[in-house]
Image (cartoon, rainbow, N blue to C red):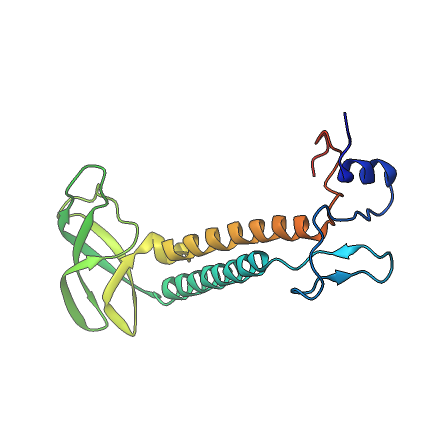
Length: 193
């Protein structure tokens, strides 16, 4: 069986830095390509797709960070506490989230039939007593006490998830892009890289 150029180069350079001639040389002068002065081997052109995916990944990471910042700032603003009474619970399907309306007094004013934001349980029946958290600057928009004490909203969790996944993808991509052609492992693919 005939060996490909990559297989032959891998066997000859086992344990050394891989210097492999490309099977299809890239013409000189296109996007960073040319001949390497050290060994006369044709250098590959930079991939525009790689740069585009890097930019897209960075934008997703920035969006994730922004969601985390907004979510944590939003929940940390709700420092006021007030006892409230559940006046209405709306739930279309048993699997849907419930919309709970409460009445309470905060900052010297009465707030009646106001939607309670955050992770609200449908198990709160009308007439039940609960405690709500509110921002002293805007007491008319209460959140569930558990969300305010937790310090993280759903936006924060979504942002953190986006940020973490993007970091993993970019790390894997950067690791793969650093290896020169021919250094991906033996031809039988027995290595993990």
